[in-house]
Length: 84
Image (cartoon, rainbow, N blue to C red; front, top):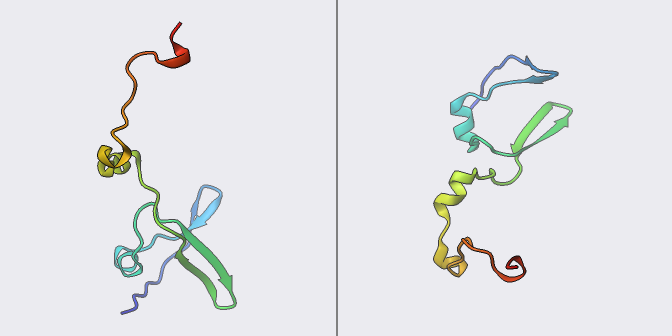
């Protein structure tokens, strides 16, 4: 089911912006950090997803599996050419 909203363009710094209502964002499957593409056509502006959202460091660490990465760990002492 398509969602519609009538919005007001507002100033955001030197740019213009509209806020996407939560119901419309859910319907479009937009999330915070979602990259989007803007296309200008004869009928107006189309906003569509442009890939997956970038994960924060906390999100990356939450899904990190050391077993999958060969048990790599941070060295706690000098090794190789670092030893003098």
